[in-house]
Image (cartoon, rainbow, N blue to C red; front, side):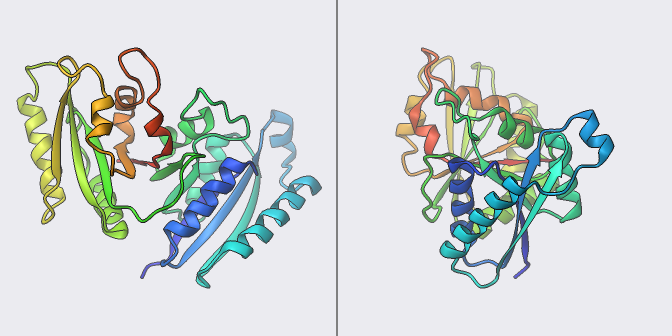
Amino acid sequence: MKKMNILLPTDFSENSRNAAAYALQFFEGIPCSFHFLHISPSTPEKLANGHQLIPEDVEEKFENLMAWINEIKKNPEHHFQISYKVNYLIEAVREMVAEKNIDLILMGTKGASNQKEIILGKNTSDVIMKVKCPALAISENAVFKPHQEILFPTDYKIRYSAKMLESFKSFTNLSKTSVKILELYTTEKEPTEDQMINRENLKNSLAPEIPEIQTFYSLKDSDPKVLFRANKNVDMIVMAAKNLNLCQKLLKNHNNHQIPFIRKLPLLILHD
């Protein structure tokens, strides 16, 4: 089995620790190198002076993190590396993805600020949207269990690339899950001819598996809570980065209140 390279950006918060624990459990049976990255906010002066030595306080936090990791790890083929970068967040993550041949970025949905009204923190949102690498965002409320059902929301308004579809299929094979495709339409005129073409392309990419398909018209079915009542066994949401705006249809109900169910589900974002 191919060894995977997993990048875990960390601010040493409880949320980032929870994401690390989730990663070790999710990939428990797979050889992995886990790359922990702490990024110090950059300034032009720091960049000019090339400050990349790990400060003592950060080094101590890394030592505590690694001691905790070694207590909970179970697979002897799990290896751990630490990195420290003084840079802007997105540039630092992009550098690590290139340097370490990263297969997946895994991080908490929120960092140390842990604002309760926010589902995806700004740093997590920036990374999963701007770094061209599959990314798995783990809620602070997420507790690992073997995945059984993946929900893939789509409006078929974009054509998914072969690269993205291959990543999707590889992930479903890895976690041995069944796939539910959630079709989200806004008008009775949908799906259009172009949407139907993209629909068939997505279905064919998952062959020989036959995904379950659900259809939701936002005008007719005004309360998306029904989606979650119908999908109570779903334990992960997978989306294309280009479709991330669809999250708004899943994260809000008609009164603009957040649906608590979403807070417990890991969110996997795939890129073309």
